[in-house]
Image (cartoon, rainbow, N blue to C red; front, side):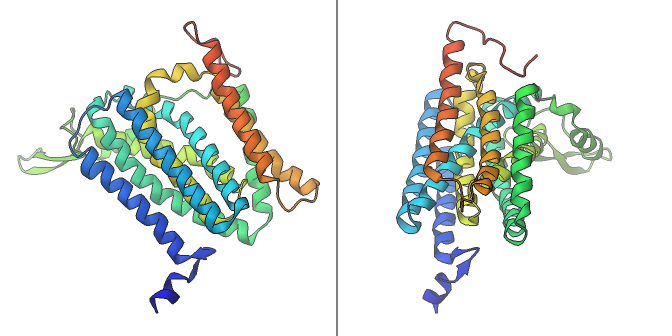
Length: 331
């Protein structure tokens, strides 16, 4: 009975494969918050780089397991998706840094906001990817819409600055600030505290760290508008889409602490990401034009790695002597 249940197809894959993935994610998150970061503290660059290496290695190892279980084609599609999602997350790091700076979040509490933010992202991405998978499976033309959208977004990134705004100017932030009890200072790493209200009775107040969490979740929602169509343009397999997405996001916290202080050194990465979005969208139309079942996965992976590697290396070279030179689409 149990064997039959575990082999039951769930979104195109046996249930046991989903359970393997879910078990890994739960263990990683439990180790992260329950053991490594049980008490609020500032995370240094060295620790951040070490954690980033662990998360990247874990994502690549899972890709190796996917290759063994599902074949070379699935492995290449997972790896391409993982690389694209991890690279797009770099753009999100800059947004998060702006949120933390504007709301003056102490570094010791930033990890907690990012951790619970990632939990929300896992659920949110699941809903968005589930909806996207259902649409793509039922309507073939939806993938073309995703592809066209990616090309437009990539072109906009090339010609516009798209600088992050002060989160306190956000409509949702201002609405919540007016409607909920909000303390005027942080209370450790807590999102809510019990304090006296206007009538003297102790009531629940939200802290600025809770508002920070809301803004981080909102930033990921905006980020997912690019991210989810991008991964569906690489593969339509819900298992590969979701696992590559989540493994790329799991290391976002560690990536933030490693890169937030040196984001200026990646001045030209945004242009590389823009070209990548245009390529990902364009290859969907090219495959249709050439009457291919799908764009060759090895070629897709090579071009993706080349664009991103070129953007990083060019940024490092142009900013080696000081302040970055103005990148395309900025100013």
